[in-house]
Amino acid sequence: MSIRDRPEPLNPGPWGPISAVMNAVRVIKDLLFVGVDATADLPERVRDAVRLQQDRSERLIGWCQLALVLLFAALYTVAPKTHMDEVLKSPVPIALILYFLFTVTRLVFSYRTSLPDWYLGLSGLADLTLLMTLIWYFHIQYAQPAPFYLKAPTMLYVFIFIALRALRFEPRYVFRTGVAAALGWSVLLLYALYGDGMDPPVTRDYVEYLTMNLVLLGGELDKILSILIVTGLLTFALMRGRRTLLTAVAETHASAELSRFFAPEVAERITRGDSGPAEELTASVLYIDIRDFTKLSERISPSELMGMLTEYQSRVTPIIAAHGGTVERFTGDGVLASFGAAKPLDGFARQALNAVRAISDEIDAWSSARAAAGQPQVRIGIAVTTGRLIIGAVGGGGKLEYTLVGEPANLAAKIEKLNKDLGTRAIADRATVDRARDEGWDGQVREMRTGVVIADVNGPVDIAILEWMD
Image 1 (cartoon, rainbow, N blue to C red):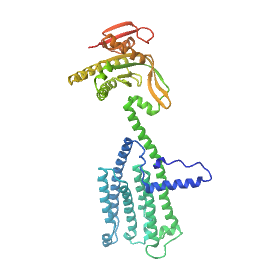
Image 2 (cartoon, rainbow, N blue to C red):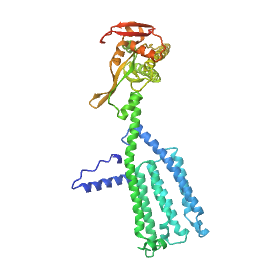
Image 3 (tube, helix red, strand yellow):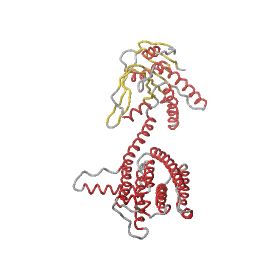
Image 4 (cartoon, rainbow, N blue to C red):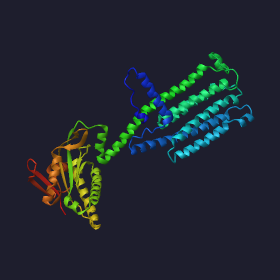
């Protein structure tokens, strides 16, 4: 079970405090030892995106570490030394060189691959080992008793190293680094107390603590407690923030996945949860259908049929989008698109009729290429209507469909069938042509037929023939 999916604490009761403690122990165990992948239950595409961001964070951490080791080296170089012999015997230059090599190696590998968990843990340990070594050596460098180094302001770099782990946005690395820092300072405290084998140089006087090489236990415990509190707060904040991050990444990729099945405008509305209220507006509807599709499907194999449909849709969809339209749905060999419904569009009727011409040319070229390759040619019929539409989500039982409702949507599919009877390729109703002309459309109507009776349509319809069938 991942940390981000840790169940909520049980309801308060007689065993509430015990349950809370056990839950806290389990979380701490996971943070320290388990090293679970909090993204394990997410889709692979989402996990890849999270890993990509983490890899980038590791490179940033590597550069920060390199800057810190160079800073430490500069500070050590300019710091006063007692004797040259002490410098030569000092472990600090060796620690700095080793840490520099480790950091450069880490940085190089971070650009080549994802760093494993054990290496990241070793990196945090190397940070603190270098820092504690520098602090410990202060009393030798300045020829002072061991408690001298407990007052070193360099101790504040502990919080930099803890915060540095937060860049990866994984709480377990912050927690481990903070716990290691608290343990490291505890070791330095014990060394200051018992390292020389003499009685512990302890005082309870704050002035003596500041002016003499004595240890104020309360002050040192405050430092350790501060490290643990900052670590706990950062860990808790990262656990909450990571949930939000993973949710945001998952929703972003869900939106991208939806865009594979819906138009981008529709996918965006669904992702935002903007499924209502429904909108009533005036728009144009375009419907395309492959002529004699049933006969065509009997002549080719199922795989060839699906390949043809995929290529047909991939040719039509970009043209619709290029003219500002939105594909609402695919109905087998049919394509239903709207202009000015899913998103505002100036001159939607004009754009719809321009799309008819572009689609017709594209399918002609594709059909000729298929014929040259010995494949069956493809013929289409197109119809465009304009009028009042309602766009919104319909459905139930947890399943919704974002769709168009209204007479233009129904009429487009019905008048498209007239293409076969009339021997035409593209037709539109009078409302579309009149509005398109008002919008500046300069296309040609081949013939206008008035009072055409269409099955299941109330009243006759005026039809504009845009193209005859070849």
